[in-house]
Amino acid sequence: MASYPQTPLTTEPQTQPAHPLSAPFETAQILRRRLRAAVKGRDEVIDLIITALFADGHVLLEDYPGSGKTTLAKALGESVTDAEGQHIAPFRRVQFTPDLLPSDVSGVSIFDVSTSRFEFRPGPIFAHVLLADEINRTSPKVQSAMLEAMAEKQVTVDNHTYPLDAFFFVIATQNPRDLAGTYPLPVAQLDRFLFKINMDYIAREAEIDVLSTRKVRRAAPAERFVTRDDVVAAREAMEDHVHVDPRVHTCLVDAARNIRAHKKVLQGLSTRSLVLMIPALQAVALLNGRDYVSSKDIEYLAPFVFSHRLVVAPGAGDTKTVVLECLRGPLEILTRSTMANVQQTPPALPPQGQSNGQAW
Image (cartoon, rainbow, N blue to C red; front, side, top):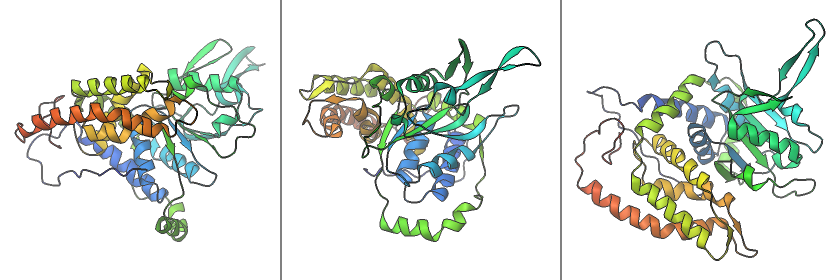
């Protein structure tokens, strides 16, 4: 994976009211520290997962067994505490198999003899973080139940609709190296995943660190928790206060049109993917200590957001190459126009909801 430089925040004492993004940034940093303490050698994957969480998206991991995905998802779920009055499981793991039924995931209505009424028993999908392990091994019926949950944050059982929590976040995995007994994910469901991340083996030093710190990592982390409300509030603040220049919209649309017109592309990007890209860009800007989206954010996230949504002709090669090729021209135009503006802008903190091109 490509590396992405982190932009540090200034540590100078503040002489003005706290920036509206200070609390969301701190929430992101707490999650980052907790996850990096639990999982070694996956710093970029961790940052992408936090980005997807703040952007209210879901993540699909292509990996191999024993890569740390369960540890990562569990650490994320256990880093978040319930809001007052709510009792939702922080983390649930579902192993998807061909004989799995939708009710095994969503829940089931059971007849209560004492009340002569059916009562709904929630399934494991009613959690803050759901690890859908080997999601491509289950039947289309279960896939459709998952699609409703991911798209609408609700489940339907016996003609009754039950809402999921606003926090609801799915980390799904699939093993591309073992195709026996799998059901390829439909295009509509792939389009619901904000990111698709291909995981590889970690570096040698990180693997040694995993072995040497196994006892320490089993202990409870010293870092404090964040609340479910902290994350939801961070999403709202990010949407209101991380500035997205209209030229970013133009860049994304032009890149999508280039991809659709590419001779090797059989199915291009949906408009939904462009809509989902905006909060992802805002989230990665927040994670890097900025209140504005830059061209670097687009270049970094585009392969993770767009590549799995493309259908290319046989022998066309890597979809990531197609995405970057079609993005090059619109990005150059965006970079030239924004650089000209930044050079003319005084280094002062902008009013809320705007940006002057400076890190906060």
